[in-house]
Amino acid sequence: MPYDKVDRPAIEKMVREFYAVIIKDDLVGPYFIRFLGNDLKNDKWYEHLHVLDEFWTLMMTGESNYKGHPFPPHVFIGPLDVETFERWLKIFHEVVYGLFVTEIADEIYKKAQLAAEQFIENLGLDDEDD
Image 1 (cartoon, rainbow, N blue to C red):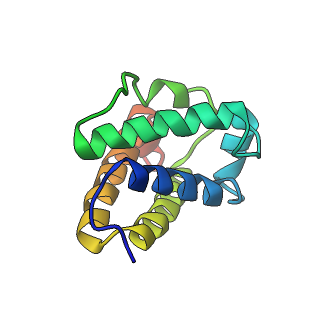
Image 2 (cartoon, rainbow, N blue to C red):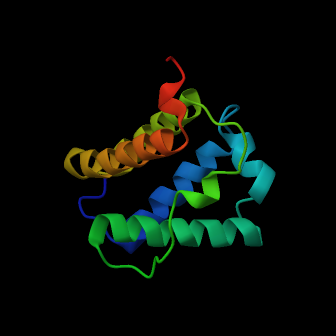
Image 3 (cartoon, rainbow, N blue to C red):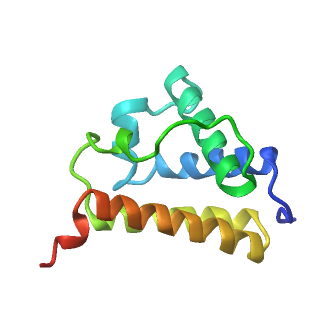
């Protein structure tokens, strides 16, 4: 049964399911594997998943210990393009709509779309076709 509310356990489930799919993806997975490894149970992944739990808790509930800035860590991870973000969003969509009722999934996904759009703009990728 899909989650009908957003709480810490639901966010943790979302984050872990998302990254379990991400690391298997041929396009997006290598970015994460290069910096964090391919075992979601290692210390680097533990820290990353915890940060994402805090980030999404803040985004969805306004309550969190997240104090970071999501953009800077992504600046130096390698050559990114719009297709990479589109795939990230596609996978995120599949996971979120598989876990939450539509109304909540819509809200979460909209925030992910905005984040991806901001990253694309900040990285100057929206000018690729100019």
